[in-house]
Amino acid sequence: MLYSGFMQPHQPTIAAYNAHATTYDQEVITFWENFPHEFLEAFASRLKGKRVLNIGSGSGRDAVLLRDLGLEVICLDASQKMVDMTTKLGFESHLSTFDTMEQLEGTFDGVWAYTSLIHVPAVEATAAITTIHSFLKHGGIFAIGVIEGQGSETVEQASMPDASRFFQYYSSNELKVMVEDAGFSFVHESRYQPNRKVYLNQLYVQQ
Image (cartoon, rainbow, N blue to C red; front, side):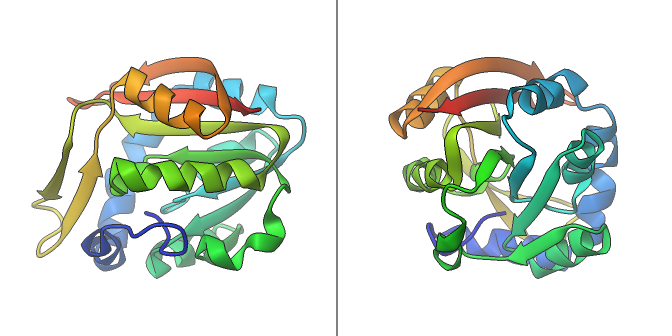
């Protein structure tokens, strides 16, 4: 779930999350209950401070896990329904485009973008990562999670009738090249397979 200020996300994807926010939240309960704590700790332990921007925060289940590690989490999402959910959880939450957040450049110790950049084409994700780089303090940490695979597709899901979502898939090397080209250094990688999909988790430090 991303933002029109620095890219053009798949607009039906945002509509799908607005229309089926509760369904989505219920579907990801197990995903986040079983999420590898090691990756969360690897991210948190490398931060020089506690201020973290959660891009594409969804219903906030990962934001809660980060908050439980003592981090100050600010949530952004393109779906108003998702923003409402994270606000109710007590987070500072924004229905936001990045072009309205210039005053926040260089103010975050970390950026967490888990399965958010998958909803834009790879060519547009490059610009997004460059913007993410600008939000971080020097030496800030960037955590990204994507679905491992090739190419892209638009998916219609039975539990979300009359809705479709765009998905962009990445190999490990494709993701590394894209992020490193934006000015980051690779530091860590792991995988998480809660179902038939494999989630690729990578950490970077801002150069």
